[in-house]
Image 1 (cartoon, protein in one colour):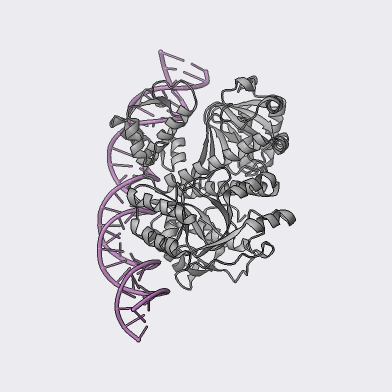
Image 2 (tube, rainbow over the protein chains, first blue to last red; image 1 turned 30 degrees about the horizontal axis):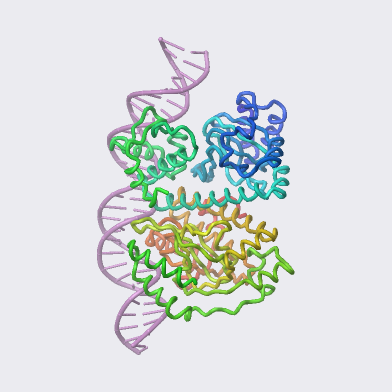
Length: 275
Length: 275
DNA sequence: ACGTTTCCTTGATCTGTGTCAAGTTTGGCA
DNA sequence: TGCCAAACTTGACACAGATCAAGGAAACGT
């Protein structure tokens, strides 16, 4: 299926610039074949779901959870696959169960800026909006816990636990977006990189996972990091090398590394409290 | 009560070392004299309120409006006055009735980035959060329609028209923040200025006001524009001069100007559709 | 195992915007 | 009315980061 969606993207861009065709294909695929290349993980029981504590459903219990359990569908995407196109109407909302996805905007001439990073437990979609304002792309293999939009919106109306959490999530995103505006507008390349890694540390410590000795993995390629930070991939590479040669980071391979001096890193980031 | 909180914020800033003196003056004015210089406009009847059609109360009618009418208090601030301090607990929420306010974040060394611009009908404050994450400053004389936070939050719980609109507003802000991330991360100085003026045009055409022949007023100083766009004030000045000498803008004085060629301006902005 | 491709690093150079420094205009106030 | 401070403009120069270019290392398909 990943092949198909890519094909769709292709057609779309050639013929329409944006809209109809790929939707049709997407629909066919999802309805018809299911995810052939991207294995459809069988739905995990909500009770055993690894992202339950932070996801949109975190406040729901008992009967509410049973309903969600019934209408949810897991869906997987291969790394690089496009999950949603800008301007497309969005027929589902979802939580990220595993993997990393990016929200991106692009100028006509191809310059792109990432406007959000979706890590496990993050939410895609908004009540009352059916168009996405950006592209959503799987940065790694991604599994989503999807709900058809209409049923989900109906459920929202009668489930305060759900809508409350959703408002919270939206406001958190707004705060994050504003922090990022400060970064994009005023921080140096060095500060940007430090802030980014600092954020990875914070985020990974939140996931009650095995805090395996400060070992971390970059969820993005150099180019994607550049798009997230408003830099070029060369500058990202140089700054990472600088942090490495200063003994602040140590790389095991291109993607995984250890933070030898978290304090120094945070000082460089320019943010105040460790929060 | 606002006086006390301001006092607290004041001490904090003096001791932490960030732009002390003007705060002292500000305190004297606000605390000592009350808002003498900033005349408290007598409350306008909600029915006659100029921002009703877009503000948080826009969906309310009849009984709901009566309640709001009863708990609202107008409050005015002089240009330059600080309305809220970052980290301060926020004991009211408000709609901007007239004037312009800015949301700003500052790095330790004084670099600042504006993360939002509040024009008439825009809303300050969020349900479920009592701390502000940025400074709010009156860019011009400002009048706010304020509600004490607690009563307002209680009202939210029983007034779907209000909470729906509030969610909408939060999501609009999120979209705006993301557009701004693209601007900050990827646009050139020239494109930034063009986008900014383009936004002013759009915003002013929304206010059903007298569309007086494309005459517009910059709501911000050069330095404030620079902070909004992630530039320096010199660059802002140069880019405005460039647009002037290219016959795209014509200035009547430093703040008010006419757009001679809106099409060219929009093309420069790099955004796609005129929306 | 091999070639091919993709991703990453590093170097050399260029350029847009920041920085520093005068001037100039404007508006408020005595 | 004229002075003064604040706001703005303009110029000269510096520099962070972009761009252009070359090469290296890991991943992938055959």
